[in-house]
Picture (cartoon, helix red, strand yellow):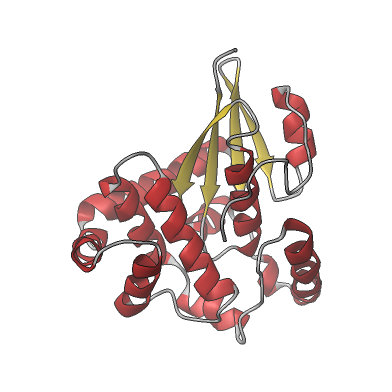
Length: 228
């Protein structure tokens, strides 16, 4: 078998489309011959750094997005449901604390990105299904507990997430995404023959499969799906 192709997934839990891309890439991690690297990143920094404007701030795009997410939730089998106040959740509260927490989980993680995957999924579930906060320490703690972390681990991670080390690591990941050419999430970077190939959004999987020499088998490939 040829060596695995390295694929980086840049994401932020404030982005519902990132959740779709995240679950699909996690499902295909054991189907395609790939090495998936999760890259928790701050979407707000990418939007500012690229000069892009969030779709939620454009009225017609926002209306379309609301309907679109309902269809995509069913198609991808991801339990998406808009928050009662999307503007507050996405733009007033944001995700900086949440992504610092995820970055801290990755920094302290053992055995690859398994903990990062579980914690990220629980944070997405909170904001995009349960209509709950993801900014307060108590909210991050609840997500951590559901992801299988102990009270002592969570306490350590909350302290670490406020450290300069973690703040700089998240800034670095955000800058790396911008250096690749990011303007939104999810961003999938496939490393092919020493060169990065970029795919933006949650609707490029068929093209991605073609480019990396794999087959797209739909949103639910013939493998056990990621447990939601």
